[in-house]
Amino acid sequence: MEYTISSKAKITSITLVVVGLVALLAGMFTGDGHTDQRLWANLLVNGYFFLTISLSAVFFLAIQYVAEMAWGVTTQRIFQAIMSFMPIGAGALLLALIASSLHYTHFFHWMAEGVTDPESHHYDAIIAGKSAYLNLPFFWVRAILFIAVWLFFANWFRRSSLKEDTLDLSQITDGVSPIYRKSIKMSVFFLIFFAYSSVASAWDWIMSIDVHWFSTLFGWYAFSGMWISCMVVAVVLVLYLKSRGVLKDVTEHHIHDLVKWMFAISMLWSYLWFSQFMLIWYANVPEETAYYLARFENYKLLYLGTFLVNFILPFFILMSRDAKRNAIFILPVALIIFFAHFIDVLVMVFPGTLFEHGHLGSVEIGMFLMFLGVFIFTILRALSKAPLAIKNHPMYDESIHLHT
Amino acid sequence: MSDKTIYAIYDDDYVLLESAKHLVAKGIHIREVFSPFPIHGLDPVIGLKRTRIAITAFIYGMIGVSLALLGMWFFMIQDWPLNIGGKPNFSIFTNLPAFVPVTFEFGVLCAAHGMAITYLLRNWTLPGFKARNPYLRTTDDWFVMEIHTSDSSLDAEEIKALINETCVVEIDEK
Image (cartoon, rainbow over all chains, first blue to last red; front, top):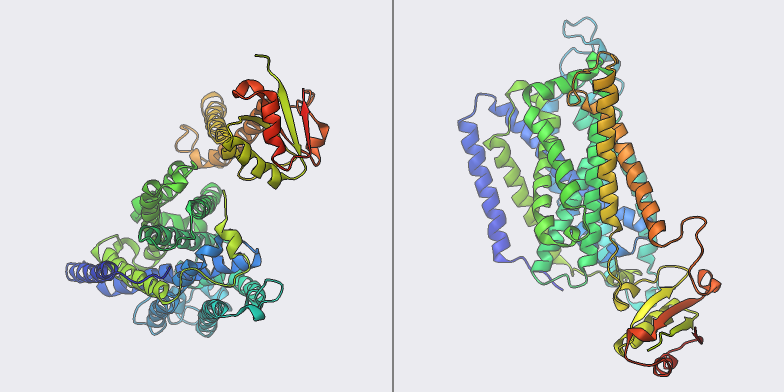
């Protein structure tokens, strides 16, 4: 059951980073003069996208404990491995936020000088009205609190799961290990915190770029996007590990259930994307439509394209039971919607930071590939560090016999 | 050869499942199983084909979506265009976002109702239909297999002897 990183996987991830770097440099030197801002905006996009994938892995793990979910127990190590990218993702995101706070770049108009000062000619009454929440000290308290607590829980779940492996029979009472009982309690605390922090972090880091605009659905929309990306990563990892001949305890029934999640969360995301759009389209209030105007004028293909791809592909291709068990159907859909959800985050950020100058070019692809390479390598390294089958979990046996 | 129907009555779903495996291995065809709840893993043992209800659900859903779009087009675009908040009302495409919620709901409604009615009709359990299970207790705590002598080359006595090898509660012949 042990997994070791093959040299092929190592070379693939290094190639991704190198190709990404070359594309990034090529894009920088042939760019149109907004290179600085473009780099920082890309850092924010990638940091947020990959950090929240790891975050959703903690969330899905916690859901499994709280719901006392049995079927997914054989795949828990995979979600634990996805969590391992969190420190790097957090680092990249914090770097982008620090750069913005120190005025190396400007993502957040509300951080600018004088916007809350009635005497200044930069005064902006709408931003001043939001300054009780959107001010630098409180922003940083939240950012550090969220990331610190997420890192704490990710670390705790991983460590306690490894500790559970080493328990001996005398420490297990009534067939249930004490660590399992404690994990349920910790999961409850995490989910309560996550419910607030996943939404508020999307407000802080993404929605406040378009500071004059707000949407009450935005947090959920961002949350469903991160969740689906995480399920895609998990499914692809399971298929990869199965093809390597490890992960014997994960059967086609587990793959079926994971792909069901992928299918369902795709629908949730599409539902929320459309709900947010439709209400604003119907009401047609100028301060709300400004957000969509910026997207429809300069990012129409990317913006509508991601919606169509992320909705139609999973809906029609993954609907049937046979397709949910067949890698030939799963893998292309998974890879396409993973990239399309990256573009989704891109279009959340770019219209407010690069305005009409942003586009999907070699800088964007390059930095995405670099992050992807590091992401893949970090996850595979975490997978190779521990056995793929967890031990002493009370429902492991039930999970092996999953039948769908 | 006259057809006789043999009922093997069990009081536990797991025992029935194991017995079914045993009987099928001996060449007996189990035509039907009556049980108060679905028995996991039984379908492949007695050779049931996979349900096609999902396909019907998809077809009903698509019919619902088409009907809703057709209706919207006729009511709101073709027959009597209404000016609602200045929304475009000259083509279905430009006004599509407004029609999506209704279309979605109607698709779900048609899929759900069509699927439920198809299921009840296929099982002959619509309200007012006469129940076809041989023993009323199969709706409570009995698990019954129905075996026809015409389905295999064995005669009734041989089949009963084989059933008696399992942990059967009672054997009945009709």
